[in-house]
Image 1: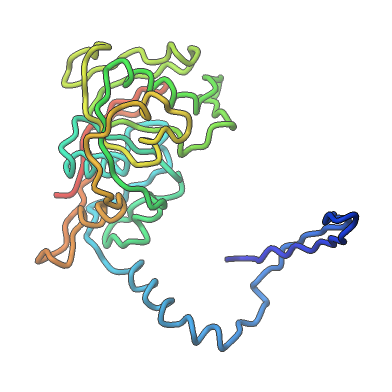
Image 2 (image 1 turned 180 degrees about the vertical axis):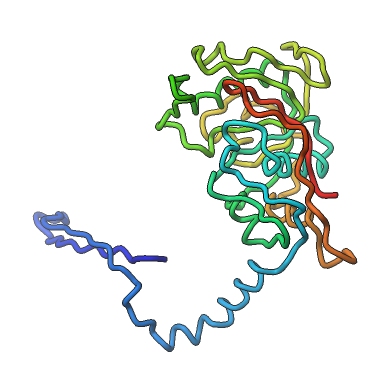
Length: 273
C-alpha cells in the first residue's frame, strides 16, 4: 500500500439519534512512516511465505506476451488463459476478460506474480451449455465496452469496466462497433460453420460471469454442466508446470494471429507445450 485513508467524524446523539455534524478525510503517505518493529516481526513469516509463493518459477515462456492490446486484437496471453480453460474442462468454447492491459507474461521464467498480473481475481471455473442465439447475445452485450468507432479508432464506453469485455476462444467472430449494440456481430462461426440460434455449445468461463455478473442474463440462465470450485489462476499455474512434473513447461505464444480490422476478433488457440 502507498497510503492509508484516515476518516474523522463527529457524531453527537440528539433526540435519541446519532447525527453526523462534522467529517473529514485524508490520505497519509506511507513512504516516510516508520514501520512498527513488533508488527513487522509478527508478520515476517507470512510476508516471506507470500513472497516465496509469488516468485516461485512455474515454467518458461518462449516469448513475452503482453495484454496491452488484448481488447483490440487477438493476443497470445488471452489465448493461453482460454486454452487452459478449454483443455481442462473439454468445453467447446472459453472466455475471459483482459482484466488489466498493464499485465503480461515475460520472456523467460514465469512466476505466480506474472499470472496474477493477467488474472488478479480469485475466480473459479465453470462451464455452461449455451445456445447459438445466446452466444450471439453474449458477444453483443460484451461489445458495449466500445461506444463506437471514431476517426482515430475505437471509442471506449467509460461506463463499462474492462473486466466486462469478454473475449471468446473457439469461435471466429467479427464485431462491427460502428453499428449499434444488438447489430454488431457480423460474422460468427464455430469450426468453420455459421452459428445458428438453435445450435448448442459448452462454454468455459469464470463464476462471476456465470452468475450474470456485469449484466449478462443470457449466461446466468444457461444450465451449469461443470463446477468443481477450481481456481482459474491455480489452473493457469498448473498449465505452466508444477512440482509434480519433472521440469517446467514452456508457454508457446500463438502464431499467425491477425491484427484486428476495425475490431475483428478471430480467436485461435494457444497454450503450454
